Image 1 (cartoon, rainbow, N blue to C red):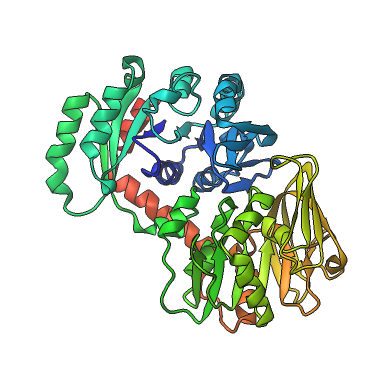
Image 2 (image 1 turned 90 degrees about the vertical axis):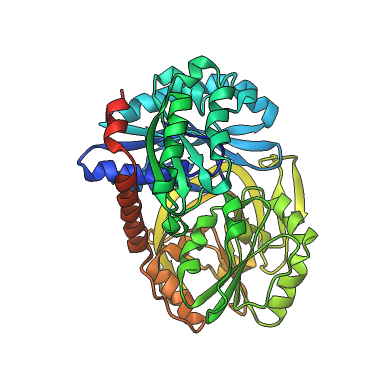
Length: 478
């Protein structure tokens, strides 16, 4: 199990790299994360949803993702509340305090999923969540030491030298842990190192001497991480738009933005200047504005208005600009969104942005499926996935945006054809669909996205193999 001294120290990336490295040795490798908190989720072939990071790790392992790889997924809907997904299915919503009481009841499901994963694997690589030393959350823990103790799983601790204070991170973690928890740790990894590694050899020895834990490696900073899907929307704050780019595509950073990794392929295109618009900023002049998915459509509608983005969108539309709404963004483009069952919070109804003549009613049934088909306007093929609640109807649905391979129709288009929306995520990851979009904007696609991800996973595995003691990890695994 790989736990961290904090969030964003590189746990997900290291596990992905090790999954590929061990898979290349011929081992049946499986990733596992007991509890994840993210609105960046993936649909699994077995009809559920898991964190996007575990789907990437499954890909690195060269195996299809399953709901058992991430049995508990929390999808934040507010500052203190989240939707709770267990073994791929929504079981309800919970406030933070309520979830603390719920956690111990979820441990049997977590261990059940782990047993199924372990039964089909030579090696399971487990990812913790947040910090190993969140001692205020230790009671009933299922994400870190609570799971490690229950599953008798040895732990490697990861620290992030790039943020500074690496000695305090690792030594402080040991000091904060109860002795029984600290005894689960068999080694440590220092991640994101820049510079001459020989100058840090003495420091690694000092940490090992003071903790009694084995040094498992000093991992250099991996610049290729930007080519892989991120788990946390906070990573988008560091994304800088390229200064050049033939076309400008703007994406407003909604407070509860979901499935944001679908914009990665656009960000990599040399011809695209992709701008993530942060709160407090105005939407720029753009060739295309994409209203992204949201975990709380009505709340993000209000957030959109608070930022003044609704005014910018209307002005953009009046200038003849193109707008695409994806999932929750599609719902926001309509005349209103109703939540009579209180799916996202209190039962209520809100006026939409009125750029499409459609209306949405949120329902309890969640669509989770992989889909393929074509864009109706030009026949450009696509592969993607649905992950949504709600039903959208109205006059503009008579001009659907997408046609699925099974004949079903999805989405809506305005009369002038410049405003469109659909429920399908992942359109831009399909090279064919992305090329069609860029072509319609006067640019061309220059990358093969899926091949880029595969190449990056191999580069990451090469780095893990060169700088981490994989044999020591195998020896420690029980």
